[in-house]
Image (cartoon, rainbow, N blue to C red):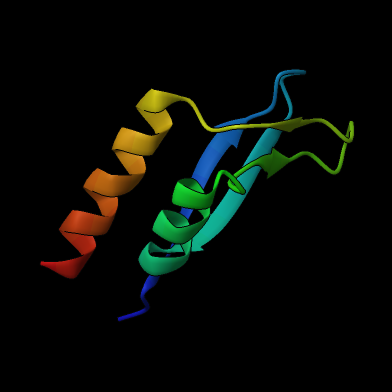
Length: 65
């Protein structure tokens, strides 16, 4: 089983985006403030919402069980 998971999100300009993270990478980037999403369609950058962060952690937890 892979330790990386794919997550779907939507940029501020309503473009669909899939991001892939490993749990360690996700937590490290989140702690350092370096976790931002980037949309290649419109070149927007934005941080994940608190709801997305909670969903990511929930899915990582399910994946490691």
